[in-house]
Structures are given as C-alpha cells and as structure tokens.
Image 1 (tube, rainbow, N blue to C red):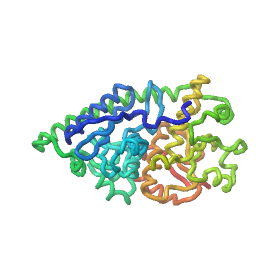
Image 2: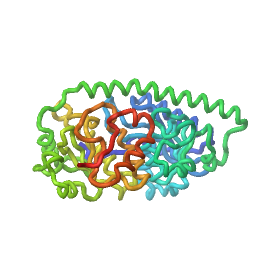
Image 3: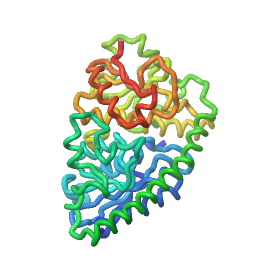
Image 4: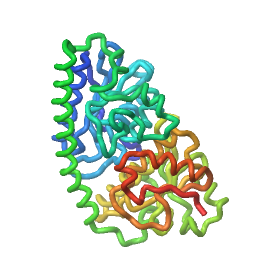
Length: 380
C-alpha cells in the first residue's frame, strides 16, 4: 500500500502553444487516449496566457481494470498538480491559467476549479452530470452562479476563455462552430464508449466476494501501512449511535471525516490536507484512501471489503459556505452507484443547517439527484 497516495497519476507535464481551436482539438485527442487506456474517456489541459500548455491529464479513476481513485477526474487532478508543482515549476497564478476539458465538469471538479482560483472551458456539455444546463453553469448553489458564469463555460457559447489565446485560429465563425460540433461528437463518443467499459468494472465489484471477517480487526493488521492522513477510530467505539456527542466531536475534530457502514460502524477517519492544496478536504481524502486500502486488502487476502458506495460519511460541521458545499457535496458523487439502504443519510453531520445543505443539493445535476441515496441529515 502506498502511504503517500498518487492523486495526480493521470497528469503529465506538457508543452507547446495552441490556438483556441487547437486547444479544443488537442483535448479531444487526450480524451481519446484516456478511452484507450481503459478509464473514462475524458481529458484536460492546463493552459496559460498566449495558449501556452503546461500540463495535460487523462481521467484516472480506473487503472488496469480496477477502480484506483474515485476522485481521479481530470480537472481535480490538474488543480492538485498545480499546487504540488507551482513553486518548483514557477507556474503562473491560478487566475492566469485556464483548464480546458473535453467534458463539462462535475460538481466536484467545478468546486475544485473555483476554489483553486482557475477558469475553465469545456468542449461538450454533459446533460446528466455536468454543471451546465442549456449552456449556463447553474447546477450548483445559487450563490455561486455569478462567479461560475464568469469563470466556467463552453467553447461554443462563451467567450471568457479567448483572453488566454493570442491567436484564435478561427477565420469564420460558422466554420469554427462546425469544427467544434465535430470535436464535441468525438468527445461524446469517447465518454459514452468508456462508460460501457467502466460499467463492467463496477458490475465486477458488486459481484466480488465480500470480506466476512470483522472489518475493524482486519484493518488493524494494516494500521502501520495506512495512507498518510488516514487513521482508525478508537477500538472501543463500536457504533456512532452508541457514542456521545462529545466523543464524536473529538473524533471529528479539525475537519476530520469518518466513514461508516450501513449499521453505523466507524471504519476509518481522514484528515484534510488543505495545507498542500486548498481542495484536499477530508471527504475527498477518505474516499480515495478507503479505495486504496480496499485494493491492498484484496492483494493480501484475495477478497474485497465492502465498496465505499455502500457507506456514508460523518462530519462535525456541515459545509458553511456555498463553495465548500459545492466541493464537498459534489465529491459525494464518488459514493453513488449502488442503491444501498442504510440507517444514516449519505452525508451526516453533528452541527449545521440541514435545510441549507439540502437546498444546495437540490440544484445538483441528475446524476446526483436521481439517487435516493444522495441525502444529507443532521445527526440525531
């Protein structure tokens, strides 16, 4: 098990200079490369002023037929890569950078882009999972609509991204839109085809042998090898229902998140790593941390622990700002995919406004709201 997780495995340093249309074409090619690698067919570029390319990324959720990082979306990876490398590579300020994606970002990625201070543009709108609806980025908390309209967009509709290119590469608007339509079709085909392949991975996970032993006892054998930032709950804490609020408050101190199973048994706890990157909150850390642990248990025992999609998360405080709500609640999409009955909502918290959180969630794309499991509740 890697103690220091590779959360940007799909990113590679790149170079060159592109025009507007060149950026759209290049990111389409990256998306098609992602499809061929066996993961979701989505790609992205990190571009500075004058169309200078700094990095490119492919989706890295799936690797060698195994889910390795449920948070491995291109845009999220590029934001974390930037904060890992900005000093060494002397990268420009985020406000001077544009993320070009083949696909409309999900709420987790839109939250990453906005909180990181970047702008973004996508080739194709994603009707079920993207933040745009009819070309407008409003599938998010209403308080963020104005900033999203200024910093997120689509090639075919918006123009905010043009300031990043010294040469547009466009001679006639009609030819440009026609070429964009062709690229959008290729990007859509890349994601549609990859979803069929990824469905096989998800189906395989649901059919795998589930570990019948005591999960907590099994994890204690791995305690010294857990990913950095991941820890086990106290051995005498059997269920969150049987714990006092004081005990849970201590468990969840400093923004920690606890992963609990359907019976309320605490499995692992994650700390945030926002000192390394502003988007590394504990919700993202816990979903990819548990998947890493699950894969390692399989490598050692030949059986899988229950999928993270059958679990819920517990926090002390609900998100207090719309932007934190977008990022944290958007990352709950990593826990969806299996309609699982639990004693707890998917997102449970000790303090905060239940009505506010639910209002934000109600504006999310269908890929979130179509699931009954996409729910939030104050812990009682």
